[in-house]
Length: 635
Image (cartoon, rainbow, N blue to C red; front, side, top):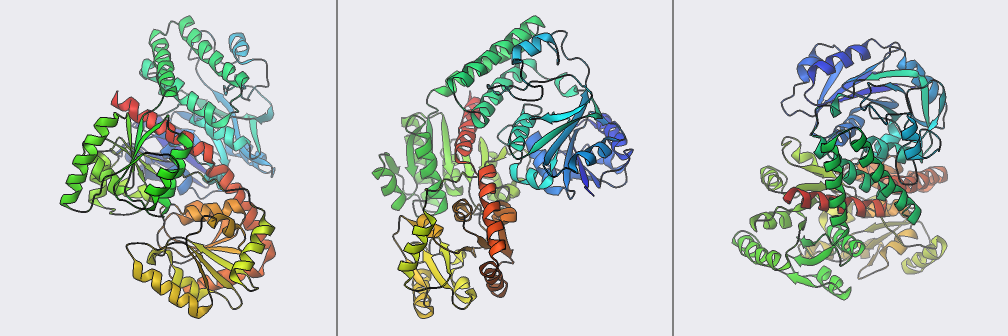
């Protein structure tokens, strides 16, 4: 039997929340659990929750997308059902949902959302609304990314979007897709974005018998001008992210913006008109060069450096005006070879930080950038000391503690590559935090040819276990040497880590004695990874685990330590063991090698996970939107 986790996201509306919870606890059948995700740092919802035994209060950073993702993480049911705190479900709503989810192909379900009229003219189901969105099927999107809404009606049929007031999804898929945390605020199309991506994974059912009464209070007291601006900015982001960018689609999108303005004019909502025009002006400005300076903590062979290189390449010179590295190293040479002008501002520790910050301050003034991208904690600290308010991309857990929180308070925004790396900021809700998972882009690889090349390189038969990464103790090379099952060949692909030269020598010595193969200076690591039987990630806490994500994209099973963000990145596509448990690691590798069905399931799940969570273009567009949001905050 399908179980449901009812999730109510709230922000300082105790009276509305009390009524919503009263309706939920009266449902028959009842949900498995009811969670209240409170975005108010004062915890105003806790007193309300205490009056409902069995209901769980969960604190969260402010922002509807963040609160909903927290609800997904906390939920234990098969289906997570989101209700607004001003929404009152009918007693039989979960009975209707259970019937829908009894069909295996159903991934989401919603129902009849009854609301008071929010406009005198042009409301849902009106002739004007139908003309504005074309005569396509109700519940679908236009080519320009605008939803074809409809009034509450009877009957059951498939749709492509759900209102956030009553939105449900299978929890396993919700955990993969998640809500886009680059969309701040409340009630600004995040439900359409989630629904659109969910609809591409299966059927979403509209259930005319499942009723929810929604006061839609969130729009009544809102600054109409600010809301209108956010509508345009958010819809532009979602259109670019989720819909083909054809000339016809762009024309349809612009047409919808004109219709929105006309709609506000007809309803004499002059603040709304001004807000829409503000948003259009901002989007037009965003079409010009954003003027980003990227500042990198390091210049080695690590994942954060690869992140910066790939993002700069995708954004291009029109957006990225300059790159500054706080040390010299291989990344500087790679970027210069690719045509980038890179300034090196050597910055060590203590007083050297201040000297580096002074030089960086002068460079930022010379460039005149709109946005500073701080790539790593050291870069963020130096940027803050230089007087900038950067967008700090946080890659790992370095320096986590009070210092990191102080730096975060001085940043325009902290963008985590995973939920794990921003957990440190949870006690400080004033820090503007979002999560943008790193996009994955791998070359097209002929798996059979790659496998043959790998066998030729290792020089013998047997399954190949591969670790890709610099030779640093945290990467767990020596653990794999001890865990490799009999007959398996261990392949290490990486380069020396300047901060740990002794470890690199030890890996080579022990690899030589055990028959493992060490390859350095390779620019075809991903091709060789694709030719391996198992990718092993026996690392200490990884802030993201790019190699693990790339292995999934290449169709290679992954066995990993359950540390840092690796469980978050791999999900049900990886096989995990406790960190440091060499025996469990050996058993997990042996299990994958012996079970062809398990390998096949892991490969399918991995590729699906990359496609839904780590799309490269979506990552680039999300980062572009974070830069634009930062520029707006400064203006």
